[in-house]
Length: 229
Image (tube, rainbow, N blue to C red; front, side, top):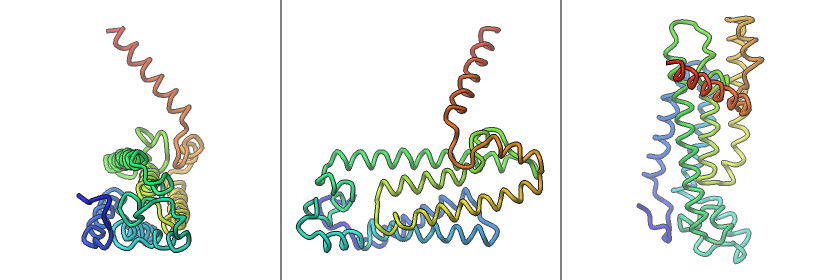
């Protein structure tokens, strides 16, 4: 455990441990094969390295902001772990804000894990070259990438920095391009079936009204089945 009031940087073993953990986590679900997949993963790896280097290694954002703002920096002891968080610093070092952002980031991280795991399970449960359109694929066409974007959001909330904020759009663009190249291959393989699926299913963000209607329909069907028995 870190003392949140002491200097919290230069802990390079923790930097390496966190980088390794997240990369193994993502590799387990994405399993890149083609060069373009490895290139996109390289962008993500660079983002992760930048994030954890600032979180536990060298706080470049805090040095830049304290040099720029001087005494106007909104939190005392900016090089403590809690006050090094930009949102907490803006709130004057509020422990309530610290608890909220840490809790929210963990919830989003768990949600990202569930989404990526369900997408991975569906694809690898398919026998042969099959177009998967059920389960989580009924809501988004690229759940693994949706999960990755949610993971990036979780980590941005957990520890926002100037570099990762600037790199995030590049990361999203890289995986968006990768997804649409994969879709061209799927359309060539499955033809009209894929075009129909693509026309009714969002790429990354689910259609919430449609999800609610489907859940209501399932609940009504389940209740009718129970009453019938």
